[in-house]
Amino acid sequence: MSIKDELLKVYCNRISDFQNIQDVCKGEQIAGALLMSPSENYAKQPFPFFVIGQETNGWEIFSDVVTEEECAGMMSAYEEFNVGENYYAPPFWNVIRKIETVLGNEPCSCAWTNISKYDQNCERPDAEHEKLFSTVDNLLIDEIKITKPKVCLFLTSHYFDYRIENIFEQIEFIDISGFDINTFCQLKHPNLPTLTYRTYHPRYLRMSGIEESVIDFISEQTKK
Image (cartoon, rainbow, N blue to C red; front, side, top):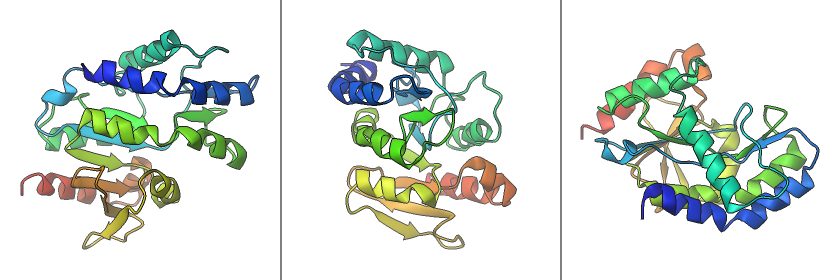
């Protein structure tokens, strides 16, 4: 079974959860769910690279009734977006392209998702909606299991650590020499590859002047 088929099966098994979100948020400006469908090139790379962001800034929208066809349609939207290939939104995709390069991977070959599969009004949801959307956060466990990355990078900042902890029970946040743990750290959990890290959104990395240091560190770890 292909990665795409395995992911579709997982998503279809959660249709009732997606439907609940649709029902609760009917008539509101809610975008999602962000359902992955990495390109065939992803698994062929020297270091299959999985990126986890915060939430979308607008996306496709399920119809009132969530079906298998709707899930497949969301995956098609993901394929068309092609991990930001034609999306001018530096520094997020710019930094990801840089990391693909230092890993020796082809451009636009990564897999990408977000902690939150939905956004509210094209931005971070309020507390009530965040609680609702978090009911499908644990899809990330299956997504990583199916895609089998060698490198994972959470661009979520420490503000999303509590949601990471809810997904991956007893996860460890490990200091990296030369960095504040809130800025850049390693994540350790049986369901994550050894080369898994958490840092800030690339915009902050660039503004704080540590973008290159983070990229260089990840590059060096792949050479050991």
